[in-house]
Image (cartoon, rainbow, N blue to C red; front, top):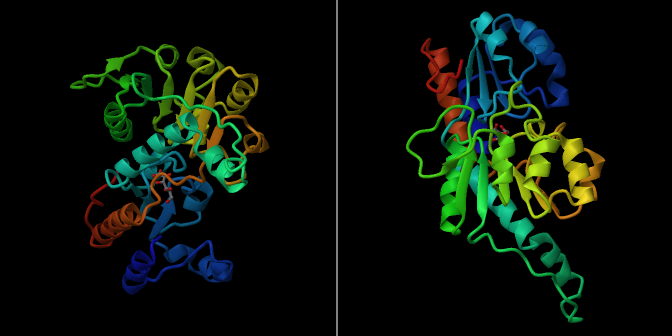
Length: 302
Ligand code: 8YV
């Protein structure tokens, strides 16, 4: 977390940091007294860990993804789970748009082309693809999906979406299934929350429906895409390209991504700005404060 947030934590609480090797023994000795855990959306907290912490009453996720915390199990033990909604929406949406443009306009390749002297030698650089007038498909029209859609409209794109439940009050075109959405998209941006229902929701059928000119962008979680199917689709030209901020088993991602054609990779940076990380940290602190005061954490999700 941001140094300022860490300082506030240290000022208010006795803090053990599991990621610091030197604190392991102290944590083992303090297990029965630990009342709250702060974790990231990608890391979560396993049931095995929860079982080792009999005094635990709050899991404060520094993020919005709850896929790595068993919410039912936490509830059965009267443990609050809180997240940091709202504050990261715009920055995650920005990364989605940035990845789309990076793929369509060959940004990483252009940077390399200039640096390695190809431009100076007057070599040819491939033309890009304009987003203007193209169809963007939003898979999962929650807060982040809507923020991506609004941005895409500013680029002159036509917005289509699929969402598990009906979304009212949108001017955008709904589709009955992820496959139908992909069939009607030039760029498919995956914004859906990760859970048992959405695991591998982007499968070979969705990728095939997206087609040879289609680009996929993922700012959600690696688990919502069948990564073997995605890598095969990229290799075989079943789809045109991919912009990915999230992967299964981060940061030890599948080796195939290192050589996947027309693919732009980011190390899970959606919410990683100074501003948003301060906002997230502030929400974590307010959830802790409420919980330790005996109140309901303000952004509790279970
Ligand atoms: C963070 C995230 O990078 O919100 C989420 O679920 O994955 C990201 O915002 C992560 O939580 C690290 O703290």
